[in-house]
Image (tube, rainbow, N blue to C red; front, side, top):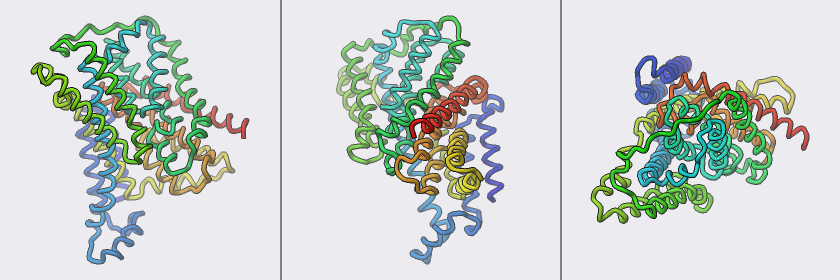
Length: 447
């Protein structure tokens, strides 16, 4: 069963990558793959599984239970809950961004970006994404920046290139901040790293992982971008400027408040996101209660019909597929294989973390980091945890489905997997390796 699940996952992954060749929607493939992985786990012999000890412990306290009962009420339910947190977060963020956009809030920002030079605009967009991702998170930042890019660039090829670099920038920006990326948050909450130290030790490496691809692209990009025309059909009823500003400030404030909400309450971020969405819902309903046309097109109820549900379902399928592999023990075996590398310290752990970063472009970085946290007991602010925060955060940029930011962008802009591999992956990899070199050099000099 172990080998069968591996083969099925690889085949499903290939189908997702070749979506535009085989003309099968990636969301359907991902959902089918996720369900198939869990069917395989359910049909397996419990003694084959690496989680057999957990089942035995459960059976000791629930002697009348079966393997399927344990599987559905514990691993499956736990993974579904973790996945649902991400999905509700994504749905809330996408709805807030659509609401701001429908009120022409982003026009307040885009109207101030006057340059049409590709090089200059690329640097502005990427640096803005880098620092915004440190305050928000990489997925929310990507959603916001993709929406802005739609207002600035008309050509699809140029738009995809800018969105691809936003993914790189958002992942790089999230890696050095304690609240910027889910894996860095995991290490921070678990007490593996301290907030000031993780910023000090990973900021330069994260910045280099973005600057290197930007410099390379600067020599390749020429000419000006073409601005899209004003799409009047989107704004059926004129929006007063004060309403545009109010929705923009409240919407962005709701997004910025999410990490603060988590820090204060220690509750999951999706609750803060949904709470902010609720406030905006009440606000916009109150603003448009006397205007039937705006009530039909400029409220949250209307925005929920516009968000890309297929990308949310794709996220559900791919995360549950990886969760199936984690439950059966594929990721545990991978972790043990890495640990068997015969190199002296610190070279061994540098190599392990670099490999984990590359693997995070293929499978979800959360279980990879969780597995590393379970395997090692290094002290707080050990170089392994610092380097893991960088590699797991930025390595996902190598493939478009390697990070939440990439999946969100892929869903919003229908970016082709193969196109991303040809145009962005090599740039992200070069930046990733350059950042790794900077981190190791920094540790050699100052430690």
